[in-house]
Image: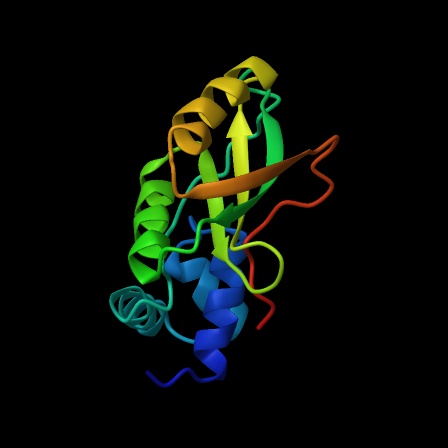
Amino acid sequence: MKIDDFDIAILNLVQDNAQLKSESIAESIGLSPTACQRRLRRLREDGAIASEIAVIDPSIVGGRVTMIVQVVLERGGSHTVDAFKRKMREAPEVQQCYYVTGEYDFILLVTARDIADYEQLTRRIFFENSQIQKFHTIVTMENVKVGLGIPL
């Protein structure tokens, strides 16, 4: 997929507001609304725009606690890693999951209603999984910056 300067301009705009109409995008970047619609459709179909979501403010919906969890798996080969990846994709509390190098195998960003809710999650996801050697939790005190935008 070839990405040109107009595509980058469109991607920069929709990263900040996925609800922008083609007319607004067109006015900002100097293309026609129809051209912007075609480009947006192509960017979605080709996977450059992987998802368009609503970001919920936790304070409005009763608050949430965010944890950073470092996980070490037992050495069981690629099937162990793949099984863990599948389990993380299925867990709605796991907001982000990274397979990493270094001391840990995975870094997770997890959300829970409170510490008691997180404790239940640890039982379900970590303690009941014999492939997990250890995990370490860091409880965040404040979400200073949260985002998935990619500087283009």
